[in-house]
Amino acid sequence: MTKQERQQKILDLIRTTNISTQDELGDLLSTADDGVTQSSVSRDLDELGVVKVNGYYAIPQKDTNEDLGLKTLEIAGDNLVVGRCESGVASAVCVLIDRKKIDEIVGTIAGDDTIFIAVRDHRGQRAVLKKVWEIFGR
Image (cartoon, rainbow, N blue to C red):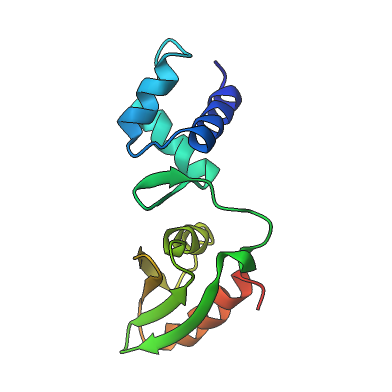
C-alpha cells in the first residue's frame, strides 16, 4: 500500500469508525496492509491534520479557517495569549497555528474551547495576535 493509499484509508476509517488511539488505527490498517508502524501512523495523522474531538480522531472541515470558530484572542501576562473558540475545535485551531511556525510562538496548548499560546516575550504578543488573526482571515 502506498503512502497516499494508506492516508486515504485512514481518512475513510476515521469517517466511518470511532477510533481513539494510534494503536487502534494501526490495527485497522494492518488488516489492509502487511503492517504499518506507529511512527508512520503518527506522521500520517499530522500530515492529514487529524485532531481528537471528544476522545476520537476527527477530520477538521477545511472549507475556510474562519469556520473553525476562533472567537477571541487576548493578551494575558507577559508571555501568554489566550484564545476562545467554538466548543470542541481548540485542538484544530492549535494545529493550524503550529503549522505556520510563527517565530514568536514557543508552543500552544488546547482545551475544549480555549487555547493558550506561549510567546517568547511580551514584545512578541502583539505580533502573534496579528499573525494568528491573519491565519483565520481577519
